[in-house]
Image (cartoon, rainbow, N blue to C red; front, side, top):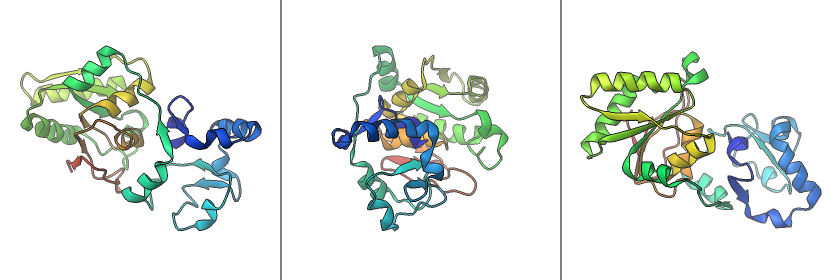
Length: 231
């Protein structure tokens, strides 16, 4: 997930001007080549990562490849990521209006539906979250999902449960927009995916995000500020 969102037009390291051209070229190529997964000494991945390993932080160059959902706490991850500067969010007026006037719901379908360990945000989760949002005075909902078929199935089920529920799918034209819409929303109901976790972590406008307690049946989720656990 880190390799995906840390592309040059999403986020950037503030020390980039100190990196020579060859190193910069290698760094920009590393996501596709996945150096972090196998390179000895300078490759950091889910198998060898832990914060107390000071050898990592003495290296001039490090390649990261993994989900990195273990061995973190919010204070430490916030400290480490403070070296990143966010580029300004680029959303059109329509999408900004959606963020300001609706509860954004992120639904993760696709391969998650086939893996029992990951398929934990079901109809019950979204019912409880929508019920909570309605109790707080919100009544319009917009859905983001990479699996539009599954997203529409969830919408159909929610309409059966809530009378006259105002809920519809966002017509998005890119994953980058999806990510930034979640980041820019004031109230969101997010899934157990790392995609929506990072959107919450990097949010600059959230008042309250409704979240599951786990990434999977086995892995606890790091709860961030302004997040309310639904179950």
